[in-house]
Length: 125
Image (cartoon, rainbow, N blue to C red; front, side, top):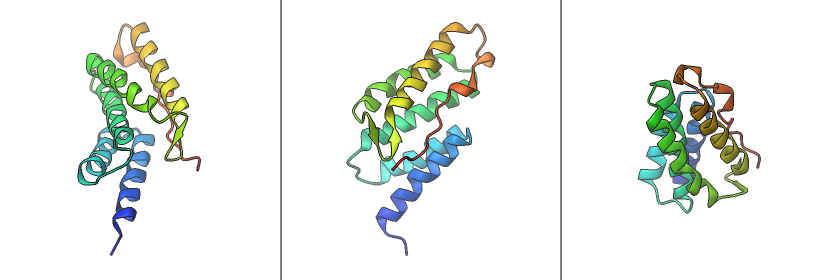
């Protein structure tokens, strides 16, 4: 039987893998389970990751206002964990979010969003 810490780590990593595969809804689901089922010292970081994934999910379903809202909402939460947390480069994530928001402001059609701006969430322990 897995320990609670193993389950929490698995959910976190499954969320990272789903996000990096641009399965943003699935990433949100893994992190939502982690955030809602366990007491976490860094709950706001997990909440920021949830908002990040749903923000990009909104771009996939052409909801530009939802995307802007959630991407803007997660920045202050990520700010609390600068420069690194859980092995993630928070500075890089925030920079990617800001570039994504700028791209959303510059394009006329959400279909033209530059997906290369989405951060890769890799662990640098």
